[in-house]
Length: 460
Image (cartoon, rainbow, N blue to C red; front, side, top):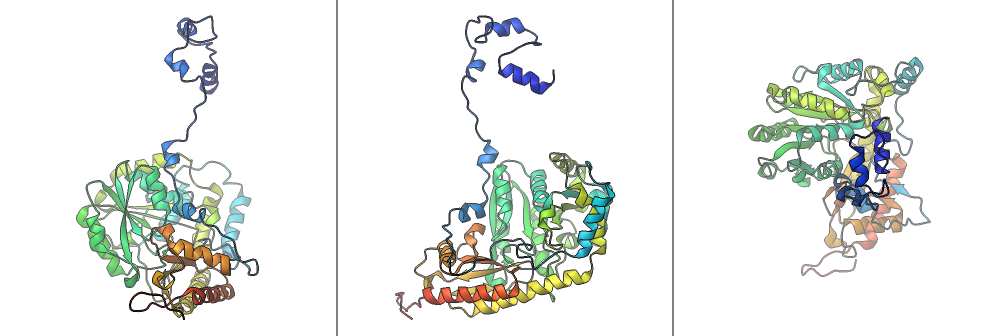
């Protein structure tokens, strides 16, 4: 009898095949006329199935806020959603044919239908290592862990570096998944501030003040979701100096590292580090416009052998929990990385830059709004001068009413723990972006109120 069926029989008070069966029968109700139930048996007298602490502690801030909003679009206007960080939604940003052909070839080969090693096929890991290796930060296949999307890569990286009771540093505003994962594991999240007046640079002094003996890593997102900012090389070096002084490893979320507007550069953190170990997380989702393919990776940059073998072994063990990433996409990975034409990347980035400029210029002229021009990624953050919109209590109320009146949905930045802003996704078709900005302008003109010197509202 296998263990599973053996357990089922035990729960049903059938004890065949058990040693010491006579004494168990005497203490089990309904079996052999036993005297009465033991404490162990009494605990099974009624159902008491509860969710785990991890499940109870898992909360996505975006869902927590959006699910509580009453979103009733204006029936006279088609809905324009500027809230979803998925470049495929509107169909105007398809992936390249070379990417599709690579996947078709992998399927047709019939070589990738089984299990791969949990960290990924050696050939696929070598392809990623070769693609991202540079003289300042060389990589080999053993430095690459393949994962089910960048989200799982981040999950693995946090899990291998942190214990319950530890804390991690997370950007504010920042990607909500960091907190979702950390809190579910009993890890404290400490928010370091990004400064909109400095194009969302890190408040370095405030960041360093958060570090203590239980700080197990700092997460750096560059380019940023939700801000669309790109840190300069000088600023990245200053962040690394903080990490070096306080001996804190870096988890670099670099999923948007190749979506940088012309005129900006985005070196990897590992290429600038001389002593700080870095786990860099990325994947196919954004640069190749295939988020549903769920292919991500961790690049292990172990400066001065700080991680040693134990962190690598830890990542290996953690990757075995779900037996690795999709094997068919792994089979296509080498071709995707090596054969996608540069023109595809340039076209995508050019489109995002144009849409960002349209959005920024349109909203910058709207009284009461303060957009911050991005330099990369797919997002633009807009500040709301709430003093000029006294009819709304906060950014959630503002964006909810925007849906009701204009059928435009922007994500309130409270979802990123940064109130009185909202985030716009700039991947929509250009004509839709122009239309959305026009509706936002009309909405703000209707609700905007100037302020007098004594603070009283004045009619326009």
